[in-house]
Image 1 (cartoon, rainbow, N blue to C red):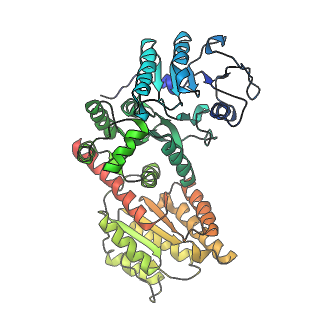
Image 2: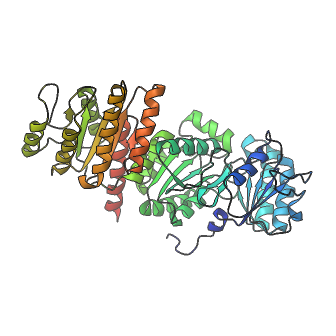
Image 3: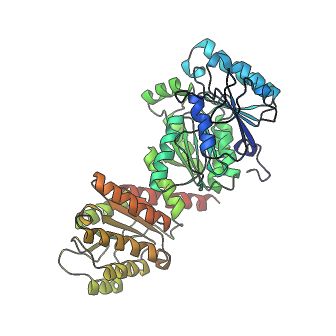
Length: 478
């Protein structure tokens, strides 16, 4: 049963003060960047640099030891050699810290007995002192709303509704960077590494409770308590979409997982059964995960699987029809009435009005006719949602072409609400530097207008189909 009162981990994501052990005035040190992230984002609470020399960092008074700080400390980031970490955990206990984030690696992930024992030692000290641990061997937390960033690449306080849980710090950084470019904004991100204490199940349960998080994404290599994880995942997926990239499903992947975070990965069959039983959505890459997060962020649930396709280019229209049906969507023929009305505004040569609608091919498309085409397709009783695709490269040859592309996306944005049905857009491009810049400009406009934009026709069909399948599963089991 999902927790209704304040979750115990909420204070971990909302600390009032943070100390960085290993903070240094040297930009070549990791501790410098952890501290600078807090300063750059103007963290809402107090920050304290801790280093052996007691040196000031970025204008903030430094201390030699956590115990020397003349104020309470809620959150401690540790970026020092592994052998020194046990003493720091003892200091955290003495300061009644709530959470310690251990960036330092060189523990159980090495597979070496003495390193495994060292990790167990710090976990036991923390447990006995009632201090929770994120890590070791991880990047920590990004909570933009309060200016908490353990990631040097995230320097924005703009928040959103997507939460991300990951055993991999690199994947967390990649997901965050790629997601930001694609139009996602985040509630919270967390990289938890070796999971000596807190693991995916704990964070999944917290994100299920967290009102800021509407969509949960996760990269998982392994779990400590399979039964508890399955229970929490099932309850969570019934409340919010959960999208999971599972690492280590092949023999090579399993070996890599063991050396990365020192966990047991679990078999492909077990995880496939878990996805089928819980309604969590499995993806094969971070890019696909972002595609799904975009769909859940910007699209309401369609009434069914029947898709109306509007595009420019006959071959592309054929391809997207194939992709849609392979993904489990339905591409029905429009009603006779819709086709008759489309024929009146669509030239005969080189076009189709049956579904997909293949609009005129050329450098420029008449905007009024394009707008009416969207309205006619959306109003057809045979259609539940729209996929609209445009090619960028043909529409950036001249300033007039570029304006035409802008006008076409403007029509889509302006009419989104009045169309009355969910819309996904595909902006096709050869991804030259120029076309990629144009893609980002038009994508950002569409995202601000509440329309998800996809890189390929196949990506759009897959994301929309999995979005519908999630809601169908939830309806079936409730």
